[in-house]
Length: 82
Image 1 (cartoon, rainbow, N blue to C red):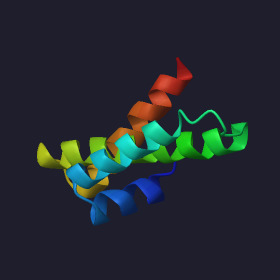
Image 2: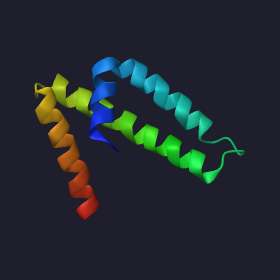
Image 3: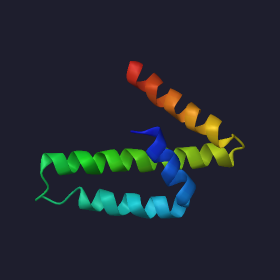
Image 4: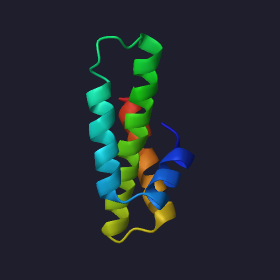
C-alpha cells in the first residue's frame, strides 16, 4: 500500500470507477491459472484502490485531502501494530 499511488487514484478516479476496477480485479484474482506473484500484484492493486475509496469518503465527510491521506495511513499503521 503506497500513499502516492492512493492519492493518484483518488485524484483521477471517481468512487464508481474505483468500484468497477475493484470488481474486475477481484474476479481476475480467482482465475486458477494465476501464479503467486501475479496474485500478490493484484492484491497490492486492490489494497491501493480500497485506500483511495476510503480517502474519497474522508474527503466527502469534510476532511482536507492531505488530512484524509494522513488519517488513512495512520489507521493502516495502527492496525499493523496490533
